[in-house]
Image (cartoon, rainbow, N blue to C red):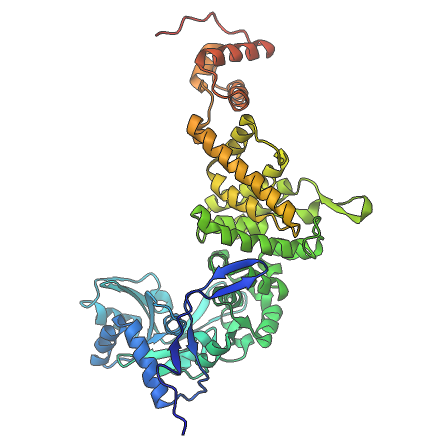
Length: 526
């Protein structure tokens, strides 16, 4: 006689901390995964008890606020991401709750219970609060829908938990646990899709995406975050409705892209966007890379090369203390976007992309600005795109002191990120060539470290500042001072530390060649 699965069977936490997903030659380590065996809806009583026990153990803080609402005759349920994450083996921190109470009623209920309350999202039915170590966001049962042409959703309060769940984005987020007893509510088979590792919508995907077109991007983000497959009808709806993203604000799109890029495998999410043609709306430069042949014949096109560079950069992040670095990841994805505009044919059917780094810098800056990324992200990503070939310009031989100084000066505060991008950009199948390039870059990093000990390369500057240049040459502030400073900086890079007296003599020689007659010099004070 068979028995229903229990906590050891139906909901068994597999200790697979060493689980590794492999893409190309890159390995990304995953979190322990909760194995959810076949659990067709409706669940058995034993399965429900096991699920409730697991939620109670993983999210104990929700019980207290559940009792508070129950005492005052209101429903409250843990909903969406926290429920999903518990069954994926994680311990959620910020807790999303949903209730039949209006925002005003929620404020009255938690007034003396919460340590602090905030109402930034109250227009959308959400009240945030802090209690002990826990953060809660409580949203009144609702649905929201974008009116055609509007950038703001029309929010309406719902009547029941089941109705609220029916308007959620995906079935993995349409599960809830009624509080304070943690009773599982799963009307759309969320457990099943977790087991299958697929993304579906509670109803027709067209309805879900019409309610909030940002969900089109969110599908790709969850694919990148969870490693799930987007089912065919959802992908078709993404393609069909991609143009609806035009009504979503750039800030919301950028927030979703940021989450995607900081997921465990952003390349998977980007590929979903490209294959469904959604990328044409938000990152058209990446889509166009599919049309370009890789000049090294490593991939069928530059697009696949860019995805590999992104994955290799992610593997290198821990080595350089840059885990989840948005700047590195965006630079890796966008580093070759200048190639379609710079393509030229060479003898023998080969292609070249001269100055694609310079063109790519401008394109990256323009795209990230349109998306309204932070100014520092725009500046740093575009600069890395411009610099990504700089290492190859020096060749694979011994690095001179002046070459090291110039490389460090050009990279500035982005040097560590440039190390990651340059190493990740090697995708050749030729093992000997790959090892040769790696040794050459190892040598560069050693030379940087050695010279940095001697000269503090991060503070590389001439021995004379602008005020001293003006005094020595007897000139006012203006372009000539800048040219003199640049001359001294180039001298410092090429010759190393000169000392103030020699730097002054070199400045005077330069001034003579420029037709500048300095005043008679007074001896420097000791």
